[in-house]
Image (cartoon, rainbow, N blue to C red):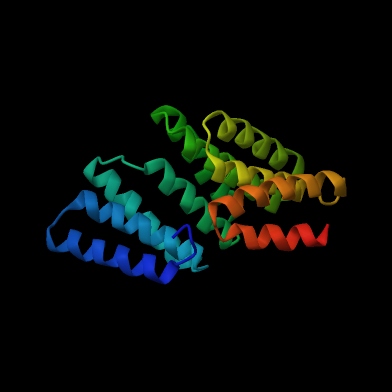
Amino acid sequence: MALGRHKEALQLHRRHLAWARTNSDEFHLLNALSHIGTVRIRMGDFRQAARILVASLALRDRTGHRYAEAEVHNDLGIAYRGLGRLVDAQHEHEVARRLSIASGERHVEAAALNDLGRTLRAQGRDGEAAGMHEAALRLATRIAHPYEQGRALAGLAEHFAGIDSAEARRHWERALAIFRRMGVPERLEAERRLAET
């Protein structure tokens, strides 16, 4: 999925879902649902993603399985942001951040910080958004998580775009170097934005 091959990822996760249903395995069922929801987000199908992620969280509540709960809340926030439900999105990112801190999942905390930054920017709260991206960059650097480093740099580049074009360009260059090394689709957006600065 990280490589942008969403249809293939969706097909694999649907097979996982079918296996879980056939075997009445609730743990795999809730995981398959959350993975399908994540793929749906990447495909831009935010309404269906939100519905699936809410179902995955409800199943976690019913069964007591908490595995990847913080990630699911963060993804639900992304889906809500895509639907324009920015207050709900902010709430889900904040829940994800609290849960990730409690469970020691630092990579999820970095993702939640970055996504909270994007949601705050969508609300017009640019200064707060930049603060979230700065915190994400510090954390992602400390735990050596290049993908979240790249996302944080891209968020800061967007912040500086209307303030200091040289600073924006510097952040886009750093983000692009990471995304190219990783071979992730975000490199295309970084290349486009860098060309515009």
